[in-house]
Amino acid sequence: MIHLCLYTSRREHFLPLFLHFVKRMKPENKGKITLSILAYGDASRFDRYIRELAESSVKARVVIFSSDYMEKTLWAARQPFEYTAKIDEDVFVNNHVLDFIVENITALDDPRNLVLTPILTNGIPTCDLFLDQVFDERERAELHKIFLETRFGPLWGTDYSFLNKYTVAASKWDSEAFYASVAAWPHHYKGIHPVRVNLLAQMKINEIVLRSKAELFVERKNFRLKEDDHPYLCNNLFFIRTDKWRRIVEDQSLYVDSFDEVPLSRYKQTSGEKWVVVDGSFGIHTMFNAVYGQGDAEREEERFVRAFARRLGIELPRPRFKLSRLRRRLKRMLTGR
Image 1 (cartoon, rainbow, N blue to C red):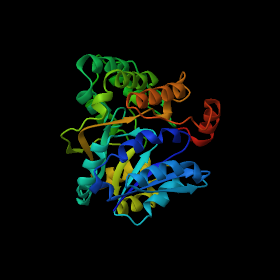
Image 2: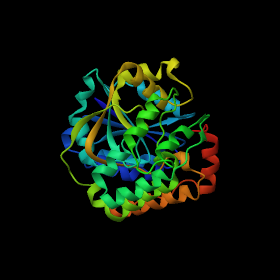
Image 3: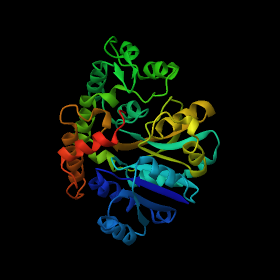
């Protein structure tokens, strides 16, 4: 019924953190999912995970790919499941969030709803909602100060300088005014926010989460579904009807690059459909690749995930690649975005 597609690449050693919570889902909800680990190379290195998932009554498999990201996406969108989740290896949510989404998955049968997505720490458009719901006033003020210190300029083949009126030229962070300006801007790369391009902002969020929010992450809360009409979704984790996703990713007129993020948001803009956010949820996205190369971003990401996993009593394996090799691999993988 529901296909969880877990995309892996250079950070596959983060997998135990996400799988820890999949194994703790309600038995009746485990029976509604199939989990596919989408990977490169030798499938046998995932045998332990598949065995542990099977022991927890989760149907799982490894699917090996030989080329790029879109090979995985096109494969996932063509599988015979009613609903599909696209999940990056650097995103974590707890079992209560997963259970709630599975139990409310038919919300996607409403033609007005495009995706279901949790609130993520640095998500676009959910970062500000996360700060409002999880951080206290002082912590929010710290992040808003960093947002206001973010200077935009040329990036991804365009120029975001017009957004400086909401950051370096402003005295107060106003996320809705910022997003309204982005929505009105006639360009396809609308996945912009100070948090996406400012390493300090992402590190500060991770620091506060690690210091005082780990217990909140695992809590069961009273979730509800909330419509969201922001212009763009950075698609680190979302659930969608498979037939709708297939139509989107197979529509070449929606593409501007070799990824499916812009097509999803362009489809929303033309269809008038809404994102549906799991209000009250708490998901972690570790770091955007837009800040790789700033300072020691990759090491900070690794340090955060390992420390957070230790707080939860979860053991992570050693990474397959040294950071110097990761940088070279990222340089080959990224296309400027």
